[in-house]
Structure formats: structure tokens, C-alpha cells
Image 1 (cartoon, rainbow, N blue to C red):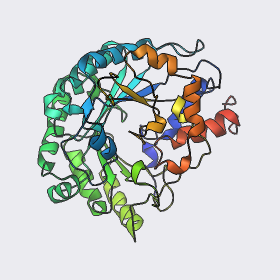
Image 2: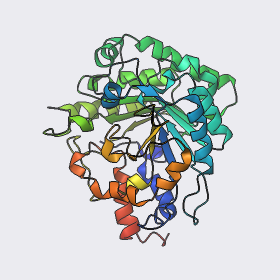
Image 3: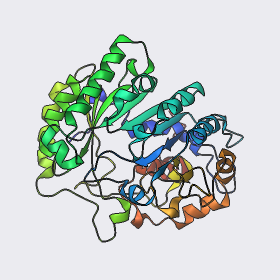
Image 4: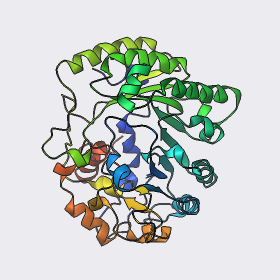
Length: 384
């Protein structure tokens, strides 16, 4: 099964875009001043209005309720823009993904945070379940992309997998956002598959047979992309499990659904089935030896203890809430993050990582490219 059709190979889900970062990443060396990450994730709040069967944020939702307050969010936006990492690399983070620890649009100040990031020259993408899109349409229109995690093609399946009967509301919200883009000149409405609204579809045993119908609805509500990827087992549930949630003829049924969905493609709509971060049976396949991705990106999260800190920083979005991947300081100022980045404490996190504790890795291509392209230079990348 092809992940995308040949005319759609230049798309936002193609991990080959990581090769553009080779000159930044080759500065990652122990004992050196590291470049700041090109992208960070910000989880404004640990709360959610749905109950997804596969929830990979369940650990923080159960153990770390809370949110980053408005003042701290504004400080983060300003800090990211001025962040000076390696003297060999210009200052500033270039992009922020606003996601969660739950549902980011439950935070009352997320619109102001989006505006502050944009004002500071940082591009923004948002991952949302879509329930509260209608509250932030003008701010979402400032973003480069908005991914809506619908994960179903019918009301029945949506309620079964996500715990509430809100499928129609989410689809209406996506349509409202798309209509706003058609009436107003804004960043989210610009041409190109990397911009606009994506209908996100986390594949699970219970929704494989609705892929085509979901893709049809995605096009109908004005999404540019239908983005599918398999679900996996969250990190805190991994011991003793294979990491795959699929059984029987799942791959065959998925292939049939994708082939049918691709018939909907045109210049303004694409279907992407992202499987390259998984094994042949859609299981965990972290085919790398070391995790240098913890020097390439970071996650800003709500504080673990509001009496001691204003926000928390983790090195991994796939292991949210795992203290082994977090800067163990009581973070009250952005300056502390700059001081910790590339420090011996940061490298100690690297030294302690055991890949057997990792779920399906979002950053597997980062790690593979670091080893094969930067350390070994197997592609002789200077010879273009």
C-alpha cells in the first residue's frame, strides 16, 4: 500500500523534508552549544472533552490536571522567538505545534497564544478534536495548518471510539472554518497541501471500514488533506505488549479502503496513509539505536506542581508525563530552558533512554537520518 499517490509526493507528511535540517542537526555534539529546535510542541492544558479509546494522553489527564497560565504562555511565545542556541545557528524557533495533553482549544487563552506566536514570527499548527473550533476561527485562520482528529466516518463510530455523540458538530465546525477561509485572505487559506485543514484519522480496529466514507466527508467539509496513521499502544501501557492494535485482515481491508479513497483526489484534495513509522503489521518498529530527537524538539506542558513551577518541559511528545524524559527543574522562567538545553543534564536524559520503553516513535525518521546521513554520511549529502 502506497502512502501517497505519485503526484502528491511533495506533501507535509513526507519525512524526507527532514533532510532540510541537516545543517542544523550536524551541530548536535556533546559538550557543544546546541542549536535550538526548529519546532516545539506546546500543550496549553491537560484536559479533554472526549474519551478516546486509544488516548495517548491518559497518563497526564489522570495524574496532572492543570494548564499553563496566560502570562507563562506569552513568555513562552516571546522566549521561543529570541532563543539563541548554537552561535553557529541564528536565533529563534521557527514553528510551534499546539496540541495536548488533551484538547488545546479548552484553554481560554489559546487564541491569544496563537496571535503572540504569529506576532513573534513563529508559524503555528494546531491539532484539535474539533469540538471548540467555532470559538477560535479568526485565530485558527492565522495558522499554517489545523489538523482535526475526527477518526471516524459516522456518528455511531465516533461515539463508540470517542465517548460522545459530537460527530456532526465537529463536521459543522470544519465546514465553518473552511467557509471562513474562502471569504477571507488568511494564512490557513493559502494554496499548497502543507496549508489548510486536515481531516485526521487515527486508524483503529473499529474504524478501518469507514476510511473511504471519512475521506468523502473530509473533502465535502473543505479539508485539503485526509491524513491517516495507525494507532499504537501508549508508553505507560507498553510492558508485555507488542504495540500493535490490529488483527486479522486489517491491512488488506485498509488497502481496499485507501484505493477507493484515492479516487477522490484532485488538485485541492489529497489522501495520505502514513505507515512508514511502523512495521509490516503496523506494529512498533523503532529502527534506530539512539534517540538524538531529544535535541531536535521539545514539549512545553502544564506544571506538575503549580506551587513550584510555571510549566514543564519534556524531550518527547510520545512519552508525555514520563519523568525520565523531563527536565527535572522547577521551571519558572524561559531562561532556564535555554540553560538546560544541551547541558550535561540534557545528555544524561539521552544516556538513560532505553528504546524498549518507547511506543511507536513520531521521530523515528529524525533518528534514522541523524545516524545514516549525519554520523555516517551514507548519502554523501554534499553531492547534490
